[in-house]
Amino acid sequence: MSQRSTSVAKALLVFVLLGLLVLLLVGVAGVLVLRRLGAAEAVREAESLAAVTARGIIEPRLSNGIVRGNPNSLVAIDSIVTGAVLRDPVVRVRIWSPEGEIVYSDQKKLIGSEYQLSDTAALALDTGEVASGESDNSLPQNGSDTDVGRLLDVVVPVETPDGHVLLFESSFRSAAVQASGLQLWASFLPVLAVALLAFAALQIPLAYRLARRVRESQRDREQLLQRAIDASNLERRRITSDLHDGLVQEFAGLAMSLSASADTISERDPQTAASLREAANVARQGMRSLRSAVMGIYPPTLQRAGLPAALSDLVAPLEAKGVRVRFDVAPDLELPVEVESLLFRCAQESVRNILAHAGAHAVSIRVFPDSRSTVLEIADDGSGFSPADLERARAEGHMGLRLLDDLVRDAGGHVAVTSEPGPGTTVRLEVPR
Image (cartoon, rainbow, N blue to C red; front, top):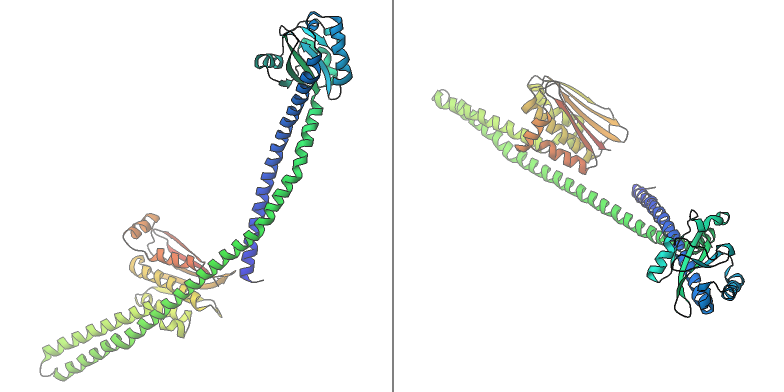
């Protein structure tokens, strides 16, 4: 599999895994919301059933005598309740007066008893609307209901023919209400699952296209970077060639001409001859400086003889100053041209800093392979520097290391500089081969 295909597949896999995690979280949240909505809808269904029972069945059959405990009125209501109302999940029916008297109950022993109205009944009386709430088994009127489990009380205001307000209370088994809510939200669960799966199926091709576009953009960026490096190298070679074949040769010719003129007039005019020889020496010094500049711009040995020879030429000024140089390049190390150029640039910047600031007595330069990268390590025993020294140098305009770090990161590599005042400095460059 190509590197491009691997990158796209990896990005797609990460997206799919994150997408599945998000879908899982959304699914869990959706289930919780559906369960809550199902429970609320089940309670609303219980309220609707109680309201229909109270106002459609019980209220039309209420007589004024029920308030006074008329036996005929109680028998009429009881026949309706036992025949049509007391059906699962309804397990208890009571009719209350606003004062808290039970004027009717399917439990005959409670008829005529007075208790404090429950919060649910009081709410229904105050609002004139249907109210519901969990039955409180600690209330004395509910003391005999412990054998039926938890109950949901629904209270509906009703009126007798003469306008006397009563409260119709029906109690539902909470387990039955919850089961109804479970069925409601479970019926929507497949819809939620299908919607989430459809969303995931839609996202995968979009993610694949996005990953491909990102990879193509990265490839285009790499190509542009390579073209920039190639153009820079070409321009360096052109400038090097122009300087070497132009100014360097002119300086050499000038030095030779001045020396020849000095030899010609040395007997007749020794003072002028001495001036000409001094001028020739200045020309030779300028020629050497220009050759060093040419070497810094583009070392000809890098392309002609390879990285070891170019590095050897690079450290020549160190050796000329009496610095001991230990040079170690892994044998048979074959590198792309752009990698060799990058390693040389790093070594060049390090050698410049050593010459200018370190005051080193010994320098070690190593180039070796490490896993999938090539490592350049340059260590000196110079004065070193602290992080504060580095920041101060950057603030003063010394940007060599920062520019080098940007160049290496663009090539996918990494530069680490370790330094302390005293022990010296180590620069380690890792760049993919």
